[in-house]
Image (tube, rainbow, N blue to C red; front, side):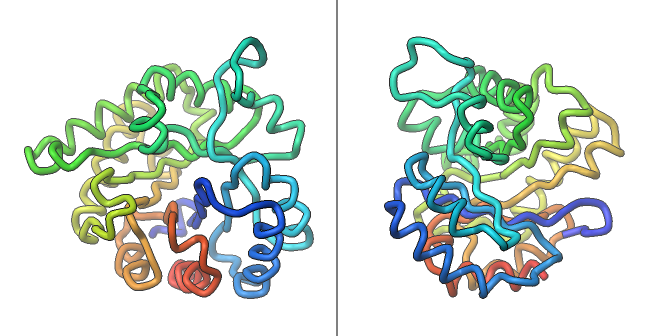
Length: 255
């Protein structure tokens, strides 16, 4: 982390977990555990149906509630989708875009990720943009090329001014939900590559201000070591964001 240049952000991605009642209970449990942790922002990105309950439970705290995805159209014949305008009307500030599970299971591409990103930014939202390599790409030594290409494609036509509202989450796909984790050195190297690409696109000042999270099975055991790296500015947390004490430990490590 480099808190003198950019904000540290710990964001929980609940995925398809928690009913509204369960979300309320969880937020009420975790609120006192992360209270006063002013050195980092705390966000929980929730399934659409739990957002309102989570927001209500989070009132009076510094916890922000986000969404896990957004469509690129304002409205139309897109059954089952939710627009950025719908989310902002509900007071949602943050949204995850391009998560590997959306790419893998629901056919999202760099093109649609880019469209969703631009739509969310145009609506005034803050985007957590996910990108990362699969196992074969890591083993074949093309991680840097893959994340460089994704960064450029996913941020196509996104302005330097809009980058103030973009967080990038580097998530090695082979480390998500597998229990595997990139070493701190691997995470630092790849986050550094992403920052170098941002420098080539927007200049050093903008690039140095962008928060880059690590999103591959960060947990209470490895968070401190990962967050000690200068280009790892936080975490996008999966399984550990469903357990209050584990999530607290990650937030503590970010202090």
